[in-house]
Length: 581
Image (cartoon, rainbow, N blue to C red):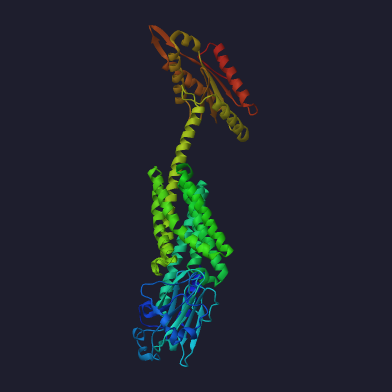
């Protein structure tokens, strides 16, 4: 960021400290020169300024009118001829006397792609009949004192304001459109600072979206978030090159700059297609669209390969047509998935609609259907910024839905896990849970020295009750025992159905007499709750309990075996009692 700011201030200094005239102190609107110029389209590349300026060649220049100014593959060279409208320049310029001029005027050539316009040569008449030549362009070295800009900027010498024709020669091997204006140095500097500030905000937004999506990916391991990161990174780098900011900061590197332009636009198209297919889940939701986007990803890779190989014409044409087709396909796929009930497709649809508009005007400018202006040059950048924000909202919505689904599945999983560890009749933990929990309790007791006791209880004469009064009453008694046991134990105690009419209570932190008292409370409460008359027959259910404490060295199975022995001792002593061992 610091380096970018240094370049911005360097650009301002270079613009504002030009030596030919004083710095502008008043405001002027930019003066468009297209309507005041003649256009020599598809000129012989071998023609020089002497040839073109000859009176015999004047017939080759025709008014521009509504035509686009462009050069490229089928028309590699063109000339513009114009006369500076001195009367519109302000104080000090009328009649060609510019010694008292207070506004410093610049000629600014703005191509649709500054790193593609190979040569821009400006010729200003001299008093001796010759021309002063100023060279610039993507394949030219930067002139000494040339202002830092992503455009081509020329400070005009005095001869430009004497009412004689000036000339611009344009040359490019790849199609590029151009417009050119006169601007005061101060207005140009202000516009540049605003321009760089706006793009600084744009790159900041894109970086923020990359980081935001990265955290999504780390949190959810959602592959769509990773594809989105690749897409936004490629889009950012493409904008960095196509908008001339790489040239502004790192200088001109003609072959490298163009290769990077096509590499990143191809990657943007490829990852855009891959991200769309993944986010919308087209493979399972719409296989036809999935195959189409796979093909689009391959074509995007072809653009990158063609650009690196130097096949600029293929990269240029294919990228522009894909730039029109891909957003339209994305919108179609989003509508199809929305109709299928895929809710996150709504944000996706809105986001790509912004990019579709921006990409469409940018591609049509590149294909020479639309002129070069603020909206066509910056439309795709605005569309990418809006799309990035909205796609992040779509990812956030996806994140929310995945979290909801994840919690729902976790709840279901916990429910089924609970079912697998729970006795259906009593609601207590089952034997599987008991053995796992008892082993853990014994391990903790060994490691920490914490007391541990268990109680094993069994309903007295339960088989007789079942045979005499039916299994439904037996089930009711078991349920009552579970309730009595819960009401007499702590939340930290684990109550499990060991099998049949036997229950086991694991009591960490409890020992000896304390555990015995709990056993007695359970016995008494259960006895009171299970006195009833059935068909004039008194029925009273009782329970026998064995209480043991961990001795510090035995296994869980040995501890359970001692509890079982204590419970049988209680039965042998007459039942309906507790025995502590």
